[in-house]
Image (tube, rainbow, N blue to C red):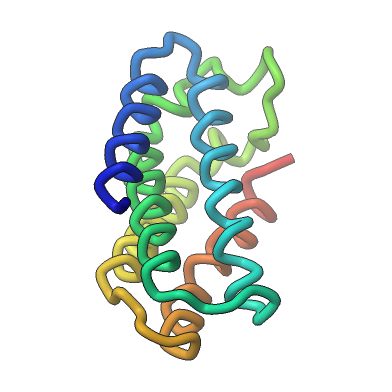
Length: 144
C-alpha cells in the first residue's frame, strides 16, 4: 500500500512540475496537502483512531508534498502575485527571506515527522504538532 501512495504522489508531483502555471501548481500542492491534513488532523485531535500504518503513510505523503514546495522561485516566481485564483499574500514577495525560511522549516518538520514513524498517539502528536503549527503561522503571514 505504501508503494502505491509513493507512486501516486510521484505522479501527482511530476504532473504539477510539468504545468506552466505556478499559481495552478502551488494550488494543486496545497490541495493535496489539505487532503492529507484532513486525515492526520482528526487523528491528532483524538476524533479518529490512531493506526500506525495509516499515520505513517499519510506522514510520508505529507513529507513528499512538503519537499515539492521548497522550490519557492518556481512556485512563487516574480509576477505570479496576481491573476488567477491567487491566495498568496504580498508578503510572499515582500519578505522573501522569511517565506523561504518558513517553507524550509515546514519541510524539515514534515521530514522529521515521517522519519520518526510514530507508533502511538502520543509520539504522533509530538511530531505532528510542529508540522501543523507551521501551517497556521505560514497562513497567518503569507496567505490572504
